[in-house]
Image (cartoon, rainbow over all chains, first blue to last red; front, top):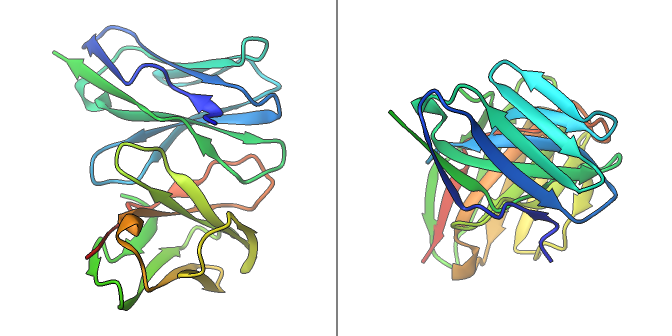
Length: 112
Length: 114
């Protein structure tokens, strides 16, 4: 039972354009959501997070949007850069829990 | 540069060997985690330690034995592993449990069981 789903295994975007990565979840008890970036041979690097009391959080080029009614979150990267090419995981955890449930990841490729 | 350091980066062992994975952080975090990641799959939680005490064990087989000797160190002792245990083992830390703060990961140990 995949509680956190990333339905697009890959995404290709031109440099300078917007990258939009999507994530859906099924557990209504999730209240904290995160995005991680992972390069080959490295561990996941934390990018940005959002709690369920918000619908948007922004940090530089990265913005996360949360739609609780649709159980959907997205990560926007503007402008996209070649160094953003990596696998992006969304993750979720229930209220006051340390159990992070990861999605299956989306491989983003930013080309010149 | 990651602030969570894992050693070794690679480990090859036979099914009868005993080995240990090590993880260290100096961020003053009081929660530490072990995850297992198989190829093309997301990381899956194995264990959570809070203030050096085991908080969560996700029904992990006893051939994996975690240990937290102090607040900066986390070990994973391995014994009689199976070929299906070959995976990337990730360590993470966070300021404390139940705090809705992000976990920070090391680069992992890639384990191969012969």
